[in-house]
Image (cartoon, rainbow, N blue to C red; front, side):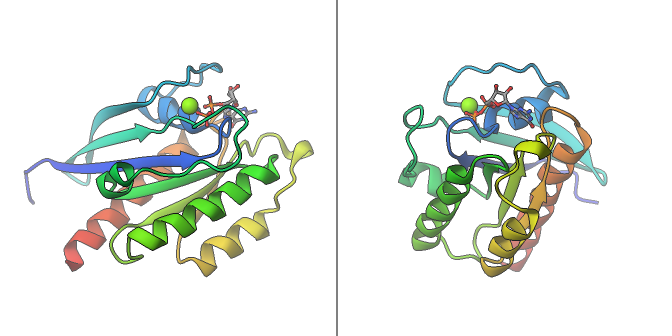
Length: 178
Ligand code: GDP
Ligand code: MG
């Protein structure tokens, strides 16, 4: 196979407090530490998938303002990304709305065929507080031709790993078609 290292830029988006940093740290370290700063940062991790070295560059975006509902995306973020993960919390209706707003913004600057997007409902462990049904998440993803996952950064590493690996598969498919 191809021995060259593949670089994949992944941008995490979504409202404040939905677990973007928790998902990033879970993926990078396999651990859930519970409290995260609000630091804008790009992290890297190299993985071998099917014999191919993949370098994940993960941009854990900062929420514009704590509690602010609509965070607008910068052109730099939009152009940098090879793939995007739009995160909401299944117990925060407002964060689901933010995902819809950010999707519209993404679609204005990037064609669906040029950047794969996954919609991720996080905090699946908090079932009792759920305000966004799985069905709603799935329907939004279907209508926007995005992938869909529900996960819990707090509970499992495996589900989080699947999300990142799925996105890398999609990014590589997208590149192969170019
Ligand atoms: P961000 O603002 O989107 O980066 O959100 P953080 O990653 O900082 O997480 C916000 C809060 O939600 C923190 O207190 C986390 O411990 C908590 N959190 C993140 N993911 C989960 C999860 O899957 N389940 C639960 N119960 N709490 C979570
Ligand atoms: Mg954060």
